[in-house]
Length: 93
Image 1 (cartoon, rainbow, N blue to C red):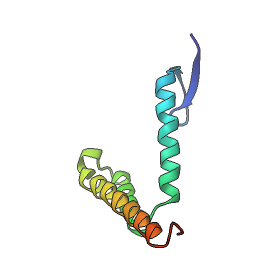
Image 2: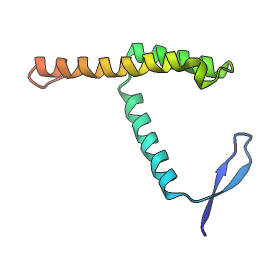
Image 3: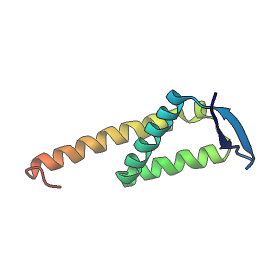
Image 4: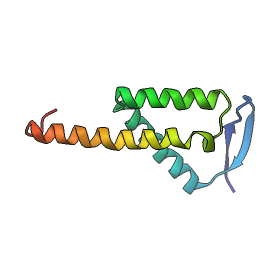
């Protein structure tokens, strides 16, 4: 059975078994994160920063679900606005 090393948050290496499905999900999440990062609006940036600060201060994900939901709505609305803008200009940004 093959395996790989993953750095532990404290900097040490953790020996973990290889899980192709988990690796594929992680890679897909990374790609999505990069795409979202590149297309983030000012409103999304503010919400992302607020979420980061809350987590950094010790909040649990359950404590900030309302912020995550707001970020999700903002992303959906902003994407729809971009699409409407493209349609209104004949497909050009």
